[in-house]
Amino acid sequence: MKPSLRGLLAVFALLTLLFSPWALAQGTLLNVSFDVSREFYREINAAFVAQQQQRGAPELRIDMSHAGSSAQARSVADGLHADVVSMNTVTDIEFLASRGVVAADWRQRFPHQAVPTTSTMLFLVRQGNPKNIRDWSDLVRPGVQVVVVNPKTGGNGRMAYLAAWGYVRSKGGSDADAAAFVRQLYRNVPVLARGGRDATGVFLQRNIGDVLVTFESEVISVEREFGVGHVDVVHPSVSLLTENPVALVERTVNQRGSRELATAYLNFLYSEQGQEIAARHHFRPRNPEVLRRHAQTLRPIRLFTVEQYFGSWAEAQRVHFNDGGTFDQIFEARR
Amino acid sequence: MATASTLVLEGTAAPGGRKPSAPQARPKQRAVKRVLPGFHLALGYTVFYLSLIVLIPLAALILKTFEMSWAEFWEAATTPRALAAYRLSFGAALLAALFNLVFGLLLAWVLVRYTFPGKKIVDALVDLPFALPTAVAGIALAAILAGNGWIGQFFEPLGIQLAFNPTGVVIALIFVGLPFVVRTVQPVLQDAERELEEAAQCLGATRLQIFWRVILPTIIPALMTGFAMAFARGVGEFGSVIFIAGNIPMVSEIVPLVIIGRLEAFDYQGAVALASVMLLFSFVMLLAINALQGWQRSRAGGGL
Image 1 (cartoon, each protein chain N blue to C red):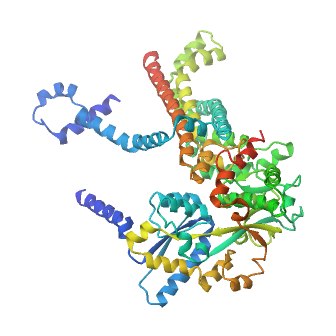
Image 2 (cartoon, each protein chain N blue to C red):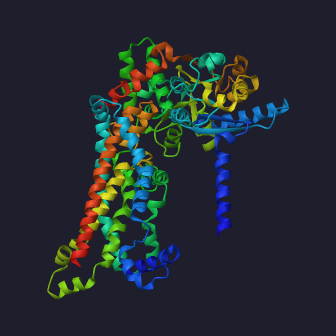
Image 3 (cartoon, chains in turn cyan, red):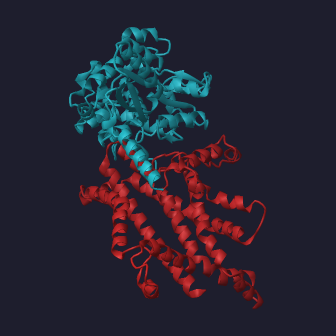
């Protein structure tokens, strides 16, 4: 009995050591990222590790963590030892900056405001587009059912909301017009999904709704999961430019001395190879040449930024999505 | 019961061995000595462990609420969306618990009083909602109850929508709450003596009278406990509900989802306000359950 107990304790101690952050060797990085970037970063990581090995760098392993973007930001703020964070909204990294986990000037640390790739919101409709949905204005037609994510629980939903709002503004409408339009749109919503993947499931597995408003990058995962030809992609006349920002986690890179490696990793996202991989996963690359090469899938589309119509991300969050904001008012009026 | 405790007593007395060579003194000792060494140590450990696992995390929640003023707290806890969510969470949990009260009793009755092939399997199935990850339950329920699902397809043409509305929430809560009623009522029914019923029958009681006057009074404390537990579970349930609720604010959004929504917006305080309302409620519920269990024990002890 006694030796086995001692053995058990030894194993336990070993495991504790292995999983403690200090035991992590220099040659590892933890990238904490959002839910649907899984396949994209799998390919990026393999390419980056190969590139480092070619340069004769020591053995390297990149660990990933995926969940909802804001949930990830909270875990990093609460102490998850991420070396780098890659999110799908600027707000999430601004939150980390406000906690001092990320440098205050993180926007200046990498090219293009620390945003290596962008995306946009488009529509997925059932094969053959039976309801003939072409643009945002079709989503408020009576009898059209729209599946979107709840802006309160998913960044995807916030983007869809702001994109619909901005569509009205881009046509010269006032904020009041936009509010009326968005209210009309949410009347056509049968299910408010919790997150992007949940919405895709509702639309395709439960067969609910005529149109799914989601990230451009979700198209590829739909085709992978459900096969090509189930859905048609519709590019609206105008949509929102969404950003996928990245940043170093100062706390971790200082503690573990991984600043150089983490910086190289994030810079790799801007390299032609990294941009090419991004384009293949339907994230819009910053490199214009790579973007041109993928014009077939990443079709040119008129995009507006959040700053154009909403001031800033923080402002948009405060006015529209905080408790008592415009989104709440839309639903409170329904009762 | 008695034999078990004496066994433990002797078992612990031997290796502990403070006074192994005093067999004459033993009967005297046994009256004083407790199963676990040292009342102070046992109590101290209990309090320490309970603090570590339960009280400290909850204290953090309560401390966090003190960062708000009372007005802020009240405002965050009573927004129209929060009120609608309380209504749904508590209302659906109540309905589901009432449903389980009736059908759980029925199930327990069948399991105790009848033998039939496959009874062991049915008995085991009752516990399944305990073990199954609730998210799995939610996805499975949504799949069969949706308009294109096995069951949903028969209701959809009738204009009855089972999933993605409050009905779906109630169904999910019925599923997760069922074992609570069955498992609290079952042992009491098992212990209830059939002779009492037979005696009542001999004295000319009708079947309804037997049920009303003999059976129900015996099991009612257990039934209430099971009901309260199923209700409490339903109020706190998250995983199974979000997949089937449709999550439309003001219509089919449960409280835990509102809390998560606030966290997504980094509104910790707003989330904590709702969480502490839920905490207060669960605490009241559990006090009620404890009182019911006390009542049940006193009745079982005195009545039978």
